[in-house]
Length: 234
Length: 82
Image (cartoon, rainbow over all chains, first blue to last red; front, side, top):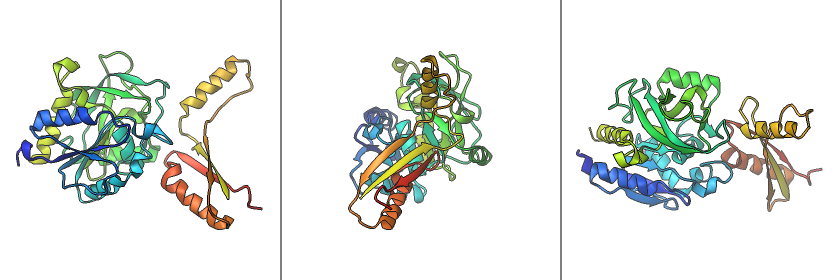
């Protein structure tokens, strides 16, 4: 399969605001426009990758991602994941994935109580086999921006030990040359992204679609997305 | 019948909002305040006359949507239940 044969679906909720950026980013890398799928849809055309984009689905009412996680389309996304389909959730998408239980843990209010919007440096961790980390070199650093108010990853210590033991921690915030501390939100054990226990679902707070060109201030997001897409076609 | 759901953060879960409120209260001279935890209350009006059935349904609502049991506890109060 070639990159242009890759079928990518991006789920759109009321309040999603990175859906179009992600569509442009994926189309730029694959020359094929992803499908935008409205949350009221009950079914999903076959897809090689489903992306839950960033934003403020349902105005963050009740809890971030809670209402989106129970939208009609999510049954189809859960079925896709249960068949071993690949799913990537970015920022609010990560929150949605935790609310559905597709990845463990939960994202709570930033420890500093402030909305944080800046570049962070991410270190790739040693993980179980996953298309989202396969093309990257262990220990590789990526600079990608975060923009969130609830990005403080939380799970109890037993769960965190289990995740680390299984290789489900994909990214950690590491020492930054950017402004402010490495960990922008108080996340447990500096966790920025986690994988499901089969490695096929990734949730991450940073926005790769916002680091696609020099005009954005960096291209590490493009590197990360391209490697993931390449792993999915190989 | 009405059901009142109270949702609170589990012990051990950081509550930055509660901590900020605690600091503000201390700054205002309420030095006796040593800890603040913020929760939420959800009032539900439900077509149901049997309190036991109501409680069971509301518990399911809490488990499936109203609370995230990874970090939150919930309690259900039914005022008409004597």
